[in-house]
Length: 316
Image (cartoon, rainbow, N blue to C red; front, side, top):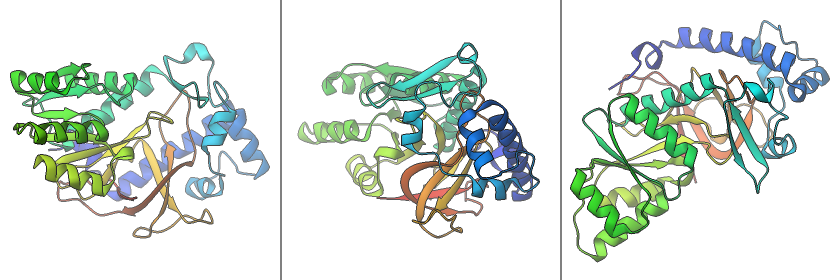
């Protein structure tokens, strides 16, 4: 199933035009409103009004975790603090990300798309387990699930016996939790020779590599779908797997991704390197060319599910 066919199955020519338009708006916004990016653009003589916005983006230096820490808490904002609806932050690491109401609505929209891509719909009952998941991530997942008619439960109980009781009593079909928590729950089921009637598990791709995913699927004998959320850094849900599980579908109307080599040069489809992300629609704190530190390869082909979005495979 596809939630937004017009966007998720958009042809490549339309998508390129959309990304070009959004990149042009992004360059104009950060040059006018972000001292951090304006200084970089002036230094490299990058014209915010340049016709070749993709070429301009390739000339931009990367945004790193160190940059985000140096700009903590407000240095990357493109508006006064009064215009920010919500801040996500890691106090110990000095990382903060601000979001307008529109930004938050877009985050919820991308999660809705991802849930449908994983065949989690209004016929599903979703248990969101809070252990190992940030509070904002939990809240956004709950709002997204409720928006598309999914029945939602929240588990705050650390006791796996009690969580099993909730799964059984409410007929839960999907569990959203951390990879480590899934492993512990699987071990509990095995030790106590209990059966679990879940139909699928959702995990964060940032903490669930291919081997861990495979182990969990063997352990539970059900699909394990991964959502890619740069939660610890920027709180961005940039994509997810679909039921065919042939890579992470990027929400490429909201995010522009690249794969770079060790020298920082953009690589073509099919070659592995580091994943770099640019936000295309963020108002409060747009980010250009953020280095994720994740090794990945991009594929640009129509998926069996019908989505035309760019797909990314991650490597450990």
